[in-house]
Amino acid sequence: MAVISRGFGGRRRESDPALPPGQYLTADFPVLSAGPTPRIATSEWSFSIRDEGGALTSWTWDELHALPLEEVHTDIHCVTRWSKLGTNWRGVSLDTLLADIDTSASSAMAHSYGGYTTNIPLEDLLGGQAWIVSEFEGESLDPEHGGPARLIVPHLYFWKSAKWVRGLTLMDEDAPGFWEQNGYNVHGDPWTEERYW
Ligand SMILES: Nc1nc2c(c(=O)[nH]1)N[C@H]1C(S)=C(S)[C@@H](COP(=O)(O)O)O[C@H]1N2
Ligand SMILES: [Mo]
Image (cartoon, rainbow, N blue to C red; front, side, top):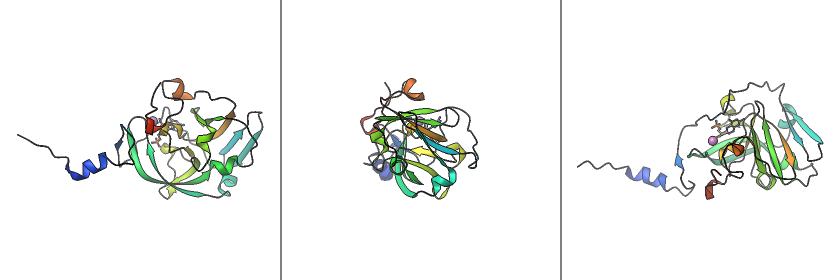
């Protein structure tokens, strides 16, 4: 009789308290993109926030990087069930970007170069929970992973972390983005498995 032992290491990792229910650990970094990878030169790049009244605040690449940059050490969880622990990013907090914007909006739609959208309640973007990042593990962010810059909202499933992000539109009411219109949960908390409708 063959007994296949997964060993202590495997078991320990499976029951890692950092792993949300139904997720497995991966050491590599899968690429998940709904379309082709857009290539945006940093000289052409900008990030804008449009408030619910239509007023626009924009940052060029240099303006964004003149703001306080934070090191973010975090786990990430994809709804397709892979999780990656202890990733390192560098970027600007949404707290910093939203600080001078006077809004009573409750939610935001993130828009990406290439057309991807995803909705995120404002309370999930504030309080040290979301960043516009341009570095991963000490290097410029690869285009496949959203470079030159992407949103990360790591406490929600990773589809909320819009790659090639170009802006946020603030909204009085939550509305579904691309995957949310195609069967994904409007919120996406990995700890309560808010995966699909
Ligand atoms: N613009 C854009 N952002 C996106 C996606 C996409 O298709 N386009 N896919 C999302 C999904 S489903 C996941 S799991 C992560 C994957 O990021 P990665 O390719 O860096 O692993 O990006 C998210 N952000
Ligand atoms: Mo995903």
